[in-house]
Length: 176
Image (cartoon, rainbow, N blue to C red; front, top):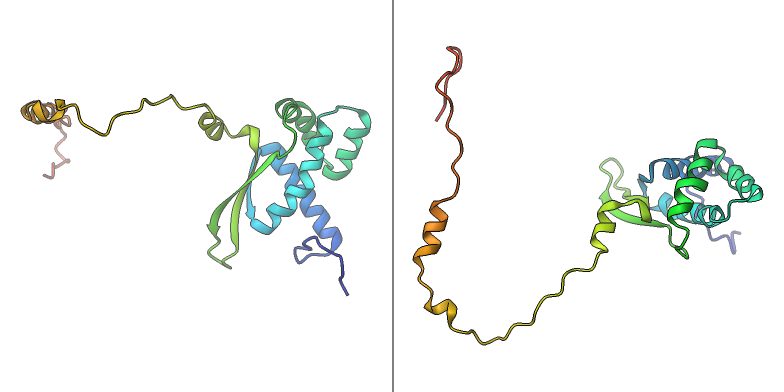
């Protein structure tokens, strides 16, 4: 019976699962974002986040523990260098899972797992938007009094596409 065994075995034996999670964690640390199935991403999140928490305190003991999980010197250098400096103030939640749809072959649910502080597109959105002013629901009457002709003239002044040059070679023909 499997009472109390809560983690996902991912359809693999223990050694294969451990090696796969180690390789995926190394790829995530080196590339900052990987695409995988949702089940693997959820297990990888449980695997990586404690390592990132350990990387905040750069000691020999923490480096050796992380190396026992990752087995890659390049990943340890990146984890304790670049990643730990960016997440030093964050109390947790170092990874983000974004669902991307379903795989064509077997309809498995796919996603992207990424390190939160390394997505520049999301960081730009985090800036506060400029404050908008409140407007009255009643119109001031300016829109009704304005003539409609300037709007028509503005549309006619749009730039046109450049015409084809007259010096085309003999082999080319223009289609219109």
